Length: 276
Image 1 (cartoon, rainbow, N blue to C red):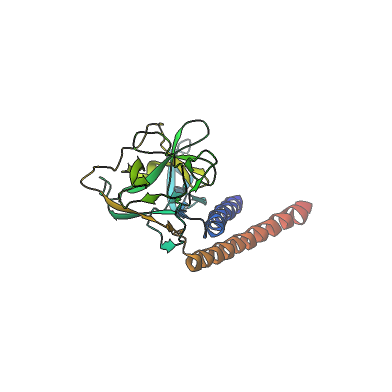
Image 2: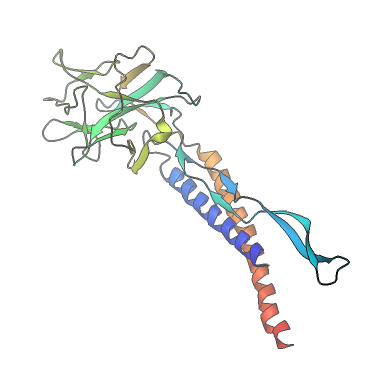
């Protein structure tokens, strides 16, 4: 009975975590460049149950152990790690010169058969390089091109891009022109294994070992365009996410009812059978 109790409880925990993941996706459905998290539920390793008895032989003082296979049993479920889905989101026109959409046209496949991904390279307050797909940029008081969180957008040399006036043009290759002169080249990083990146929140990613990602500039296997006045929308499918949230909620309720049934059985065992 206790095995079933723990199995139902693990199912509730797994569905609760899945609900939290889906809720976070839904909350970021309108966040530019957001990549929806996805995960799958798996069962714990299956156990093989056997019944062990002792079998007498002609000599009464000896007994040989014997076993009878009953069958397999799963001891619960759990949610694996959340992995972002790096599929390109829809491109939406805003008309703002500081909005830059990074559109992937061709990226290579890695050894595992997964497509690589492109990112803007930015610098946080500690001087560390981070990566983002959110091209909803702005210009701070010092003329630096930054994210809405104040992180500097870097050029190919690792230096923040400075724009002295509000009138500037970004070409499709990522070069920034002011008064007809090139003032910077937006750094585009290539992640050959994007699932190896660690999520930090606010749309930022970092490498696990702290090493910078290679640049996509000049890579013959990579083709992309930077579209000024556009942003990349979140790739969250709202209708599908709502359906998954309802499914997770109903599965949680089903496990909850099973848990309540086990609880009543245990209560009856303690209060009624225990009296005898």
